Each structure stands twice: as C-alpha cells, then as structure tokens.
Length: 287
Ligand code: CO
Image 1 (cartoon, rainbow, N blue to C red):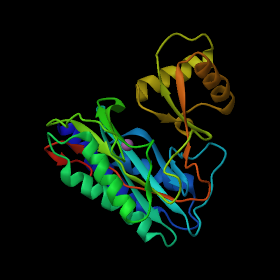
Image 2: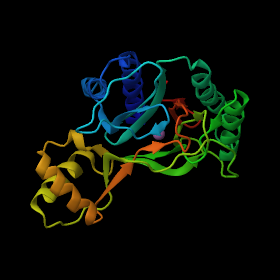
Image 3: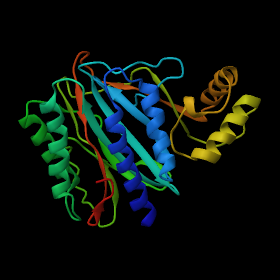
Image 4: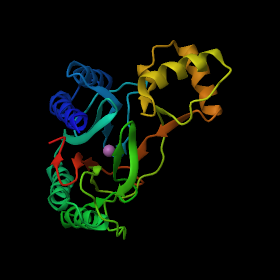
C-alpha cells in the first residue's frame, strides 16, 4: 500500500506546482516539461505523459513534437498528472481558468467532492455517477458521459470498473481497499467526446518480435521504461527518422496503440475536470 500512498502524494505535489505555471503566454511544452521534471525530483515516475488539455479538448492533449503553443487569455486548461512508484499509480487532475469560467470549474470540483463523500465500501457504482450528474447539471452544465473514472492496478492505468459521470445502471458495489480514480468532466457543450487527432501518446499492447531495427530499439526502450503504461513520442530518445520509421512499424504490427485527443462534439464549448485517486474505505491518495 505504501507505493500507492507515495505515488498519490507526489502526483498531488506536482499538480499544485504545475497549476501555478499555467499562465497566459507560457509555452505548453515548457510547462509540461517542468511538471515532469518535478515528478522526477520527487522520486516519482510518469504513469502517463503529463497532459494539459485546452478548452473543448477534454483529455489526452500532450505537447506534440513539432507543434507547441502558448496559453492565451480565456483558456480553460485541464492539467492531468499520473505518477507511479513501482507501478502503483496516483492519477489526479485540476483545471486552471485563464478566463472567467469560475462556475464551470466549480461544477466539476463540486461533483468530485460529492462523489468522494459517498465513496465507501458497499456503495453502488451507479450512485457515484448519479451524484456527479446531479451536481454538474444543477450548475447548468453537462457531465461528459463517454469519459470517466476507472479502476487502477499496478502498471495498469485503466482497469475495471468504469466510474461513470452519470447513472449508468451499474449495480456493482465498491469494495474495501479497491483503488479507483474519480474524474468528473463538466461541459458547456454536448457532454460527449469523440476520437480526434492522434496524440503522440502510445502504449505497448503486446511485446513481441519485430523485424525493423528502429522499431526493435524503440520497443526495447519503451517496454523497459514504461512497461504497459502510456508514454509520449517527445520522451523517446531517438531521432526523427528513427521515430517515424520505427513507430509506424510498431503500429502496423499491432504492437503499439496510439491514443487520440478527445475533443467535445460541440466545437466552441469549454470543459473542466477534477480528479482524485481513492483507496476505497481508506484514503484519497492525491488530496
Ligand atoms: Co484518470
């Protein structure tokens, strides 16, 4: 259990450090790098690449190798951090408002708080979704239905059960000691996301032999360092040609999965998110 507590503490500290760095005019890539450096300084490792998703993009917005940008006035920036210690994970998110969106931020924050209040052994999973939905709609926003919390396991960022942001009818009950992440998203749009552009975040699906030499080198590096956890293209120490040839081969062979960014269906809407990791019946590790 100690590793889970430690991972949560580091994730929480990195989140508090990181949210102060998100300011108008700062670079997405530079801020991300500083936050990841903080995780290492605190003796944690990345459970997934640090993501800062802007405005209508709900999640999985990772700085691309060739396409950095600066935060601007009015942005709603969701900072999502995953830290692991020996594979035990702390997953936490906060939203930074560079405009006038206090109410939107309050919706996901309050929803997380009411969900945490009822998160106890024996509570039905649908109940968590129900209170999240109720809280967010009471402030005039929509919870995102096809995105939500999840179980966590060593070296696994997404396991059963799904923790919904609405009443999904799941009668299963939470168990003592179960580790879950709860992450309400509040949206001024449709409350639905879709698979958008590719994110340059990958995950090893199966570790098997591959003929291409670049692919083999990348796979060896990635699997030794990240095992089955997601990682970013920008964090791979290979040149552009090696990356382009090697990653294409790995994707073609079904060895690597590439995540998509997750934009809201409604183009000009805004999304906020707050997230904590919980050991059910024990503690919130990322408080
Ligand atoms: Co999560």
